Length: 213
Image (tube, rainbow, N blue to C red; front, side, top):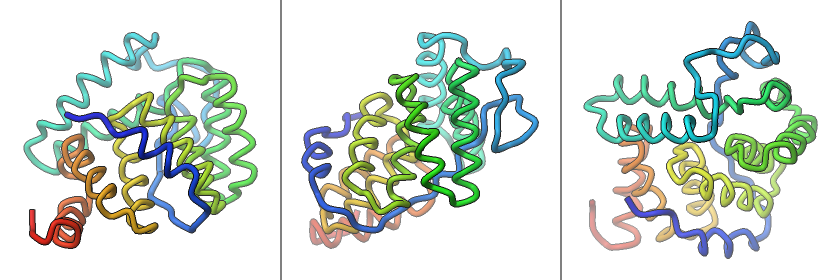
């Protein structure tokens, strides 16, 4: 599968603000009593403990996701992937992320942003910190910053299907339909059952290429 064209993202990061957003309901880290507010205790032994283990687990899960035979199977694998996404391996970072997610659920995006700034500062290679911050920036109508964080998210994890979905929606909103189509096709490769992707590809394909898929 082709990697996302990061030069395109770099150029788009210079665009002015608009008002997009996308569904970003990431699960809280595994083994927490409160689904939105993780605590730095009792790590789940089923989750990867090192960056190398994390990469290996995600690689296998993404392979399973791309080969899913039906929507139910894809949903199950995607949920496993999302549990790995939000597990940083650091109790402090998990706690900060949990507080950010709690603030997001309350639509307090300014407070969420403060927590996420600490997350990315303490864990600059933790993909979900940038993904969540991109979503928060979108909610604050700061597309320039959001695209920068999407670029970082996809540089760290080109298979991050929620970041791909968010990017495709933004590109479509700002009129970059050919680029949006490219991203949607990438998304379809990663997650063949992501809601609305097939229809969006068909619509954009007709608009951009003058034909259906």
